[in-house]
Structures are given as structure tokens and as C-alpha cells.
Amino acid sequence: MAKIKSVYICSECGYESPKWYGKCPGCDNWNTMNEEIKETVKTSAGVKKRVSVYSKPVTLNEISTDEEERFDTGFSELNRVLGGGIVKGSLVLLGGDPGIGKSTILMQICKNLSNLNILYVSGEESKRQLKLRADRLNVDNSALSIMTETDVEILCEEIKTQKPDLVMIDSIQTMMIKELSSSAGSITQVRESTNLIMHTAKDFDIPVIVVGHVNKEGSIAGPKVLEHIVDTVLYFEGDKQMSCRILRAVKNRFGSTNEIGVFEMTDHGLVEVENPSQMMLSGRPKGVSGTCVTCSLEGTRPILTEIQGLAAQTSYGNPRRMSTGFDYNRLSMLLAVLEKRAGYYFNNMDAYVNIVGGLRIDEPAADLAICMALVSSLKDTPLREDAVAFGEIGLAGEIRSISQPQQRVNESVRLGFNRIVLPYHNAKNIVCEDAEIIGVRNIRQAFEALCE
Ligand code: TYD
Ligand code: MG
Image (cartoon, rainbow, N blue to C red; front, side, top):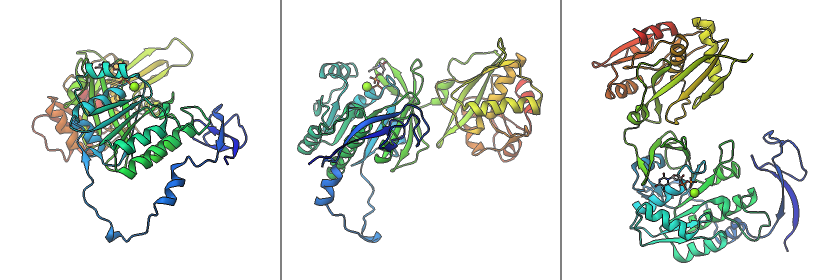
């Protein structure tokens, strides 16, 4: 007999409570506790599984460490992010804003893997829509079966009978288990559906790619629990208006989480970008103040990006500060350092920072270029076009050394930059003949080095 009781679950963090709260005690968000009916029925795959398969303890020596088998996805950028391809039996969660290209990349993987038997399950689009997209992308895979189903149990039955090589589910928020009374997309449904799919996939060693929607804060909707269940979490980032798309691994049980893959959205779907630096720098304005190029390290890959800064007279009492692609609080800190330590005053200025190309930079190595772009705009003095700057800025206004300077220098030289401004302590060890290496100790020195 099913026992029914009602619980309140936070839609942000999954906090569960028998009582309603206005503010979630788990994550302090307001108005996120939703009522859900909790039934203790035997839907959870875990219950059935525990009875049928008993996992005996083994010693470490008994466990085989053969290379795990991976599928090449046909996209080297995607393979890199996954750590070398899709591992058999793994569950990959692909998140991203609507319209960023999640369904497109799935369809293109189907195109690349035309020798595999793929099951594509869509709860969002009709078969006709899928066929139209497949035609537009020239997908010609006779072994690709399309299923428009939202009932997870039917889907798992299909997986068991058909035993495809790869399953794609678009999206997990549309999938539901009929026996649970909450609506599709609710936390209970998302969590239980994922669990059931995961157990089916692991039992038959079938890899599954699941699409997950993101909420307005940008994390995958249907809280963090989902990220704990799956093996790999990938995020598709980028500005929808711009063609550049960045695929980033946030969690990966089979590889590094630092790598990124860069794609460009074209009329024929997503195309890999082999030379991201060149793409990020295309269309850079010449002879204008307020722009500076930096080199940031994404995983093992150095990428050159343009940083734009704008300082404009404020028309309100409180000057505005805005940053796109860079941490807002760090920008406030850098502005304070510029005023107090270098004498560049922004107190009656609105300050805007933009990382061009939709990239997000979390590295402190971008500090110097951000300051230089802002100072250049404040002074209305263009910086040298052929110069790159990178370095971390400390609270005393000093330029601190950063990791992997040689790699960054090599990438800058490869793209034809002639002057490289970097922290003084890094400059000593750099070997470079094709460009001028200038080590700087403070912000003023750096600005001079970039102007003259
Ligand atoms: P889609 O992959 O459906 O996004 P998601 O599944 O993440 O919501 O669509 C991505 C966008 O890309 C859509 O606005 C249309 C555009 N697009 C192209 O520019 N070229 C193409 O070849 C395709 C298939 C889509
Ligand atoms: Mg879609």
C-alpha cells in the first residue's frame, strides 16, 4: 500500500521539510518551498535493485583497471571536455540556456556516430520537428531511432529491449514517472527519473546524454541533487546573440574539469573552433581607447581575449559598476585599488567591463588587462594594438606573478603580438625572441609599457 504524505521541497537546493517556510532554511532563498506529495511506493529503482543484485566486497587487486571504453563523438572539442570521449555506461548531463544549442549538438553527435545504434528521446519536440532539424543538419543515420515519450518507465523498457549503443534524452525536465503524483519538472520527478535512467543505463552499460534546463540563476533546474547523481556535468555557455559557444565541464568522473571546448553556431549547426584566440580577437576595434588583450588559461589551453572597459561621467548620485563575464566584486576591488594605489579616480564615473566573445574569466590573471582597459578609457588613450597584458593585482597595487607565463607568452607570440606586459617576477624566466617582454611591478608602470 502506498502511504501518502505531503512535504515541502525547495526548488533551489532540494531542502525537504514537513512544514512550509517563506525562506528556505537550506539555502536562504525566498518563496522556493513547493508542496509535493510524497508516496512511499516501490518506484525507486534502488529498492528493486538492492534485492536482485548484491554487490559483494572485493579486494583492490581483483578489480580490473582496463582502459574504460570510450566513444569518439566526432567532435574533438567535445571529446576533450569529456576527457577523451563518452565512457560506456556513463551518464552525462548537458545544461545550458534555452536556444544555446543543446538539441543541435545532440543531433550532430548522431550525425557523427552514424555507425552506432542511437535512441533519441525527445519530450519537447514532435517527430516532424526533429526530422526537419535532422534534415537541416544533413543527418543521415539509418540506425537512429526517434522516440517522443515522456514516461520514463516506458523509456527504460525500450532501452532494455532495444539495447542501443547510446541514448539521448531531451530534456530531463519533461520526463516523468506516472506513479509519482508531482508534475513533470518537479524535483521529485527529476530526481527519480534520473535515478531510474541511471540504473537502467548502468545495468546494460549504455551511455546516456541527458539535457537539463537551467533556472534563472544559471544552475541546472531541479537542484544540485541531479549533479550528484550523474557522472559528468557539462555546461553550454555563451551569448545567444553571438555565434561563439563554450562547452565547459563542471564535474567529470572520467577526466579533468578544466578543459573547455569552443564551438561556433552557423547555418549548418555547430562547428568546432580550432583556433579560439583568433576568433575571440576578430573584429577588434583599432586605435580606440578602453580595450586591452589578455591571455587567460582555460584548463591546459591559453586563450587570448579582448577586454573592454568604459568609464563615463555618472549622471546619478551613485556611480554604476557593471561587468559581463567577470566577477562583479572583484571589479569593485580593482577600482578601489586603482584609486587608492595608482591615483586613477573613478569616484564620479560609471565603470563597465565586458569580456568580448561571451567568455567568462575567473582567473586573477585577467586583473591587469581589466585595469588597463578601464584606465585607457578614463584617460581616453588607446593602448598599443600589438600588446598583451596579464597579471594579478594585489591590494597594495602590486602586480603579482601568475601560473604558466611561458604558455601564455607562446600563444601571444603565435598570434603576432609584439609586446607582452607581465609581472616582473614572471618576466625573469621567460624565453622569447620574437616579442618584447616587459616585466612590471605596479599599475602605472604597466600603463606606460602599454602606451609608449
Ligand atoms: P537548439 O539546439 O534547439 O537549442 P536548445 O536545445 O539548447 O534550446 O537551438 C539553438 C539555436 O540555434 C536556435 O535558436 C536556432 C539556431 N540554429 C542555428 O543557428 N543553426 C542551425 O543549424 C540550427 C539547427 C539551429
Ligand atoms: Mg532543445
